Image (cartoon, rainbow, N blue to C red; front, side):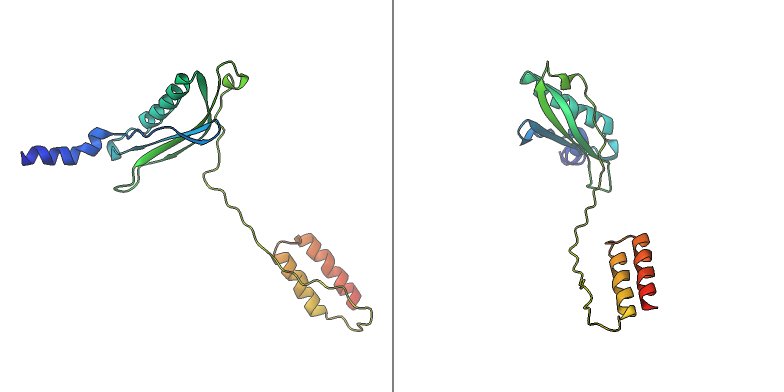
Length: 168
């Protein structure tokens, strides 16, 4: 009795294989289907993907439509407890829609880095009454603009030459 219970507890993740959650609508006409493979090293990544895509196609067929891939994301097996997974986003279109004939899944970047930065720059026009310009301060401001990416190296060099010519 104890041995049978232990075998069921130990082998159930491997016998269960993949969980099959429902199709989720993420926006009008766009759906998501994802699945985890709890088979660990005994799991089959290709069977996981094929099963998800097959279920998405069956879902579309029940509605008299065709599933068009939008994106997919897979996660390989990692360390213990980190299961393989596959997510598939798809759109539904009518069977006679021209998009149903030309179906390709465009690769997307796994990681997108976006940098938004607010930069405050103190730029003042020179007062006509100013007699001696502060060349060092002007060069430092110009260098700061270059370091922040607001001007290119070529623009920096051109402005630097103008400042040096004025200082003569």
